[in-house]
Length: 199
Image 1 (cartoon, rainbow, N blue to C red):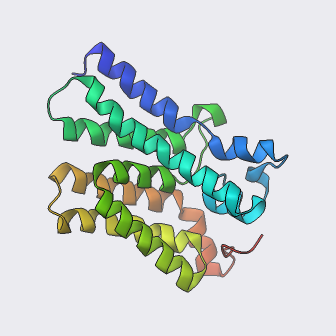
Image 2: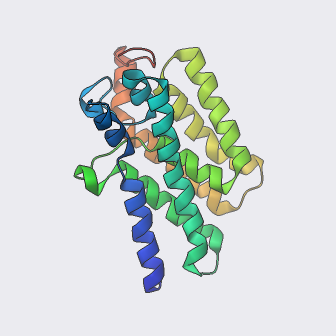
Image 3: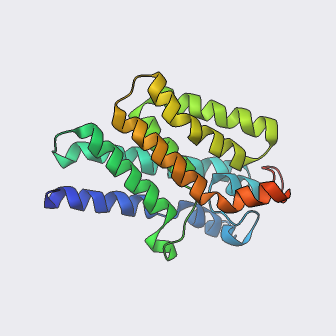
C-alpha cells in the first residue's frame, strides 16, 4: 500500500495532468477550442484553429505534464521506482483525459503520453514522434499519426529491451488512445475526419 506522501504525489500527478492548457491557450486567444474544428483542445486542433505557434505551445505544455509526473516518482521514496514512474505517468494521462477542471472531460492524451515516454526512454519517444510525423505527412490525419505512434510504443520498448513494466505501459496507453479516438475512427470510416490542415 502506498504511504500517505506517495498518495499525495499520485494525486498531484492527476491534477497536473488535468490542467487544461489547450483550453487556456484558446481562451487567451478568445477562442473556445472545444467548439471549433475537431472540438478537441489538444495540440493538433490548436494548430488548426490558432496557428502553429499555439499548437506547439499546447504540445509542449501537455507533454511536460507527463515528464513532470514521471520525475515525481523519485520523490515517492519507494522501491521499484520503474513501476512508480509508470503509475505516476499513467495517472497524469488519466488526468488529462478526464480532467476535474473540465467536469471529467478532456483530450486524447497523446502529447501527455509522449511526455511520459520521453521521460522513460527518449529513444522510444523520438522514434514514436517520427512515426507520427511520417503518418501525418502521408495521410494528413492527426488521428492516424497518433494511433500509429502509440501502437508502436510497446513494440519499441521491446526493441530496446526496456523493463516489462514499460512495455505494459505501452500497451495500456495505446489501448487508452484507441478508446479516446473512437469518434475519430468512426469519422475516418465515414470519410468525415478533418485533415490536419482543415478547419
